[in-house]
Image (tube, rainbow, N blue to C red; front, side, top):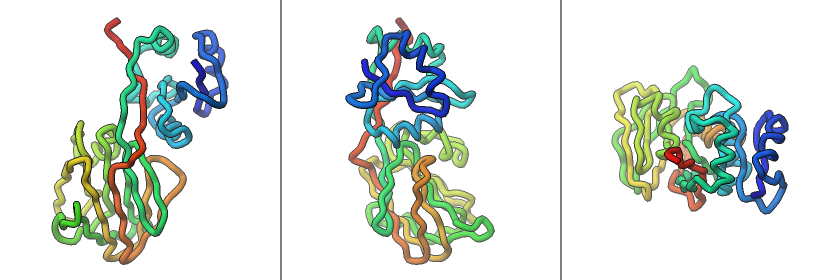
Length: 228
């Protein structure tokens, strides 16, 4: 099995990967080994979209990592005791620029001293009156245990979640069908759109329209058979 290793300390785990029976390569990859935590996994997906990811721990924060040791994880994969789970991704477009996220799309006020005003619609139908606040988070089920959960104290397993960040009036989060299109129109203020923890961003301002929907891309993650 051909793999590449992604992570800040990737070189340090190469001997373990090689001993497990993997071939470390640069192309025609069967897997990408993400060696780090949750953030490393998102960066690995951005760098190698669609290639199945094996998650190895090199961090105290890796909620998606297996409870097994890294050596045990690799042996499970070599022995074929795993499945590959497909995960939906989100796509955001504004000003002719597009970003794709595995976890979430975040619209946030550019200047933390000033709230933004925005309107939000689902499939061209308004969700309600203008919102004043720090922004909005649109999450996948996979990403609903991250920033979305810190705001809503909840998560979901199907659909697209929308959570309102520090709005001046109570704005309940909603979970939409996964084929929904979320459109956000900025009424006042400057804001920035992020996808996961990527460095790329889209700067938006008054009258900007941001469109978010399910991407044609999928993320793929290796899920181990722990009962065997």
